[in-house]
Amino acid sequence: DESLPEDYRAGYVAIVGRPNVGKSTLMNHMLGQKLSITSRKPQTTRHRIHGILSNEEMQAVFVDTPGIHSNEVRLINERMNKAAFSALVDVDLVLFVVDGEQWREDDLLTLEKIGETDTPVVLVINKADTIKDKGSILPLIETYHENFDFADIVPVSALKNQNLERLQQVIRSHLPQGAPIYDTEQITDRSERFLASEIIREKIMRQSGDEVPYDLTVQIDEFKDEPAHIDPKTGRKRKAVTFIDATIFVERNGQKAIIIGDKGSRIKQVGIAAREDMEALFERKIMLNLWVKVKQGWSDDARALTSLGY
Ligand code: GDP
Ligand code: MG
Ligand code: K
Image (cartoon, rainbow, N blue to C red):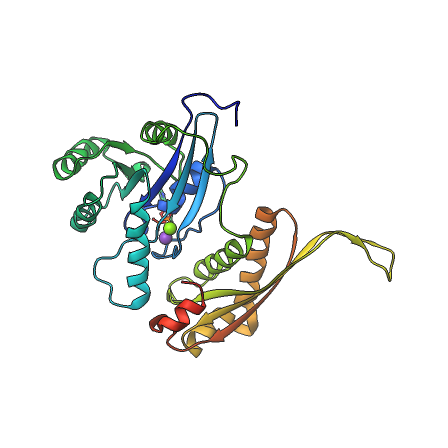
């Protein structure tokens, strides 16, 4: 684009940190739009998601990594770990996110691993709004400084949109000069199909509290756009609509019963909430059908994982 300023910058930014520190919230709030799903449960994010922030000065392409786990044994977690670290190789900057109140030793182990790459690392101390004793933040910064050579340290509240502009300036300062990588109108490289499955998964996790374990997955069986048209039978105008059929796979019958709920009440609520989010995000009418199926042992079965797109 010839109208871009000479010092325009563009690059990839990985968001890394333990589950639940607020990585997805941070990316969503910087983008001002809800792309990556969030919940109070750790491990909501299983996939790498690109969120794209474009303004007059820069384009930052965010990679929202799954949490990095130190002691997980199951195959699905191994794959999540691999995805998280492989995300670091091709980026220009790493945002290492910690929760201001919950500094932990295993954060250092993760940093050691990140330190093996040449990529600059900015420490983002999130949830600053929850730190009651503001004086405690300086010693915290000291501890991190002593242990790792951060390019910058920025306290923020992702949820309350505090200090995010400062963070964006810091991000820009570490990106290489260059033209935008993606179209500046684009906000994600993920398909609507993928976003639809993530929205459904989020609603299940939110509505089932602690009863449903993480090992469920959502497969989109059908995603069909019907353009606006005149119904030939009735002569009536019909709005554009997208038909989405999805299957929720769980491991056990007990989980299936929980997700369906008493007389189907829970799956109905999941469907309503998911449809509302999709209609807002895709900006059109959605007809959503959900099914729940038991697929035993899928999270330990590499072939099943691959067929589900992991
Ligand atoms: P992720 O697993 O690192 O992606 O974390 P999420 O973005 O899913 O956030 C986990 C939880 O922390 C959610 O309940 C968020 O609402 C909450 N959270 C995220 N950022 C903040 C923040 O700045 N302040 C507070 N108080 N809560 C936050
Ligand atoms: Mg997340
Ligand atoms: K989470």
